[in-house]
Length: 501
Image (cartoon, rainbow, N blue to C red; front, side, top):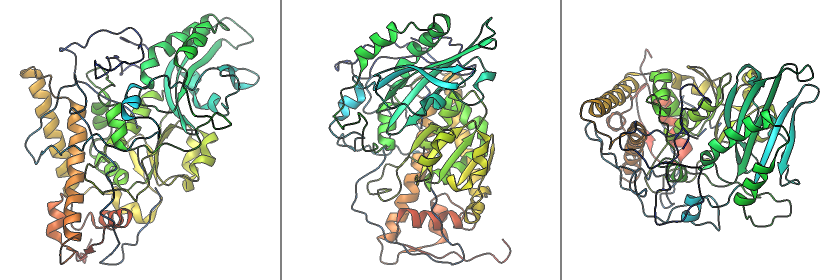
């Protein structure tokens, strides 16, 4: 168990046992049984985004949809996760969506859901990155020795990290995902200019259980700072956890995994836990406030979202995950033809080439130069300031009455939950479930209505339908036009424009 970490001032991690006690799992770092008095569970991790455009000059739009395809996202919040309390929410239209069966899409062909859930021996590489006063960031050591780690020296030690003492970073390297722990230690060395900086990290085909090794990586980066060059613990770790991957000639996975919200929430949501009372979701809501409704629309439209923030990076990686949770849908046939959710986590200038071909992603960076590279993103988020340079998306930045009403309901639900936890000692509900289910129910209602209209004799979407979806017939017109185009839903949108917008 990891407690009272000095890594980040607001977020502390606690590791809990695998959800199914009957399944064997790789031995995690020393842990303790879950305490029922523990603070509400929180979760963290990734995303959505793209460059779709649509004209809003016409009063109608008609696009074809294929309703026969399979589901792309579902939250297995409590039902598929033994040991995790099921949250029951009521009021304000809270009807818990029906969960699908266990035959879900999996991100890695050849691995069963059970195998992915347990994340057995899936560490592809372990490495140490150091900052050299003459050469800059460089790979100091790695296993296996022949793996391609080009660029990892910059991903695992964020630009501006010299100003902080420690941090942790999630990132992506090709089709692998990485977690690195960074530390900065003052030293009396003229050669090192008074500071020794290193990161110790790992790569895996999946990011969902990388957190299991957070404590180990934290300890190892401190060890490397104090005793440089002693790699035996890292060698033993790699031998114990190294992945057995199909041979591809270069040792790399040749196709990127299909990441759906199903996988994210099934594998990570029940397992990740932030024990600080102001956890991931709570911080996200408090940080963005009503702007969450703006982010929600961009996430649902699969736009390319880039979050800028100075170090530390770890907390910002959680915002990537929270943005991902905004786009959850559990209705069959919805979203199959749209770009998949692509969590990139931390990126830097070395990722520019990769981002040029991405249709949809959410990422974070500490490098301000990205703001000038407008061709790489649709939405730029600098602190609480959400902006877009794309003219057809400008109307989505304005909050309307329906947005404020939805945020009021979310806030009211949060207050009810916090009250029940404080007064009644209710530990069966948590803020993350509320957050995820609120937006999933909202998304389900929208797509259910659109599907019913599209399948009716008169596929005309009226102002009454729009209000029933919780949207503003005028204020959300541009959003609806984009939504119909992106998801390929064949309805006619007939909403008169106001003479004075």
